[in-house]
Image 1 (spheres, rainbow, N blue to C red):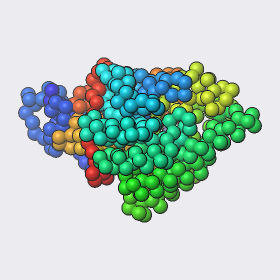
Image 2: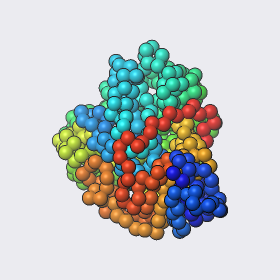
Image 3: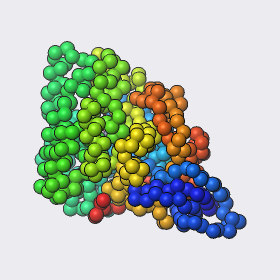
Image 4: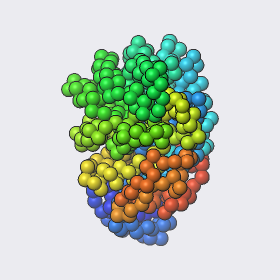
Length: 462
Ligand code: URP
Ligand code: ZN
Ligand code: ZN
């Protein structure tokens, strides 16, 4: 199948220009002012006046994840379809090791759920929750043979997913040896555990106390500690869902040593704030870890993006039905942590970032796609518009307004954290590996279209 997109306004992380794009099969065959015999083309689409950006990459999502006594409510089918509607053509999910069992055991489990069920392309990070001599032996195999080059660690969720610093250092040394990267949920698990217990003992059980149990210092301290351990071991690190000024300042300090500590924030931390917790149980919609922060933190994060300290804007998409959130109606510590955003990330970032003048179009592409492709070993197959790259493309009407609502979204969750939010800029069409998969609010493919992307070791990152 050969498709010619004529008069595209192409934006990459570095370019902004008008040209035609020839798609041949799954990849981009040519870009320029193309004079091609039209009889050799199957489909010609004139997209004059529309922006074209690389397919979005969301490197932080949790689909059908067993967590806090339940499962996140998007399946691989519903979550990856919603991702495509929102312009995300590739996502990276987290495989969670069960303590006492092998990494391979967890991967088999996740493969069973994901294989043949996805619509967009996907990869996995491997979350190590039990680092020991047996786990150590599996690291090289995952990097060399499975194409899973990033290993997630939790410094929080004490008694469940958390590892201690001894395990962290051991894992960092092994991952560094084989050319991988450590992702981290960097908050101080012991301190949070103490504050949760204290609030509960005092009878403070509303969602607000979820927020008050994870003050900024819990994240700033753990981020600085993680950066120090990464510096000591020489292992590249990536802090997921960083939310606040204190934590970003810890990274700012670390970069003075010229070490590799990449930072991801998520769309919610850029545009929502902790005042949402002040409304009785309704605040449970935004119970996530870390929690939403203050307006001053939003300003720090936008600035951090422009300073190059924050490289990625993800979602940490981890939806739960309202019924599931109600598990914690009498105790905030039982509210499943997480919120839905995979379908909204690109349009919210475009609307709030580009349209409101906070970031440039090039920066938008960099943080929504290109940097994740580079950091996680998928570039230039993914993350850009270039000859030879996968034809993963998002076509926008930058002037169309629309309103976010649970009544129209495609995520399998019965509320939206952004209900009524007005966006300027709408995704009209999405191509994944050369196929038009979203065409004006219609998804044209079925589950099984998505491919697992084996990722490369990365030497130079960004
Ligand atoms: O609240 C969150 N973030 N839920 C998902 C698990 C995690 O910590 O990323
Ligand atoms: Zn986390
Ligand atoms: Zn997460």
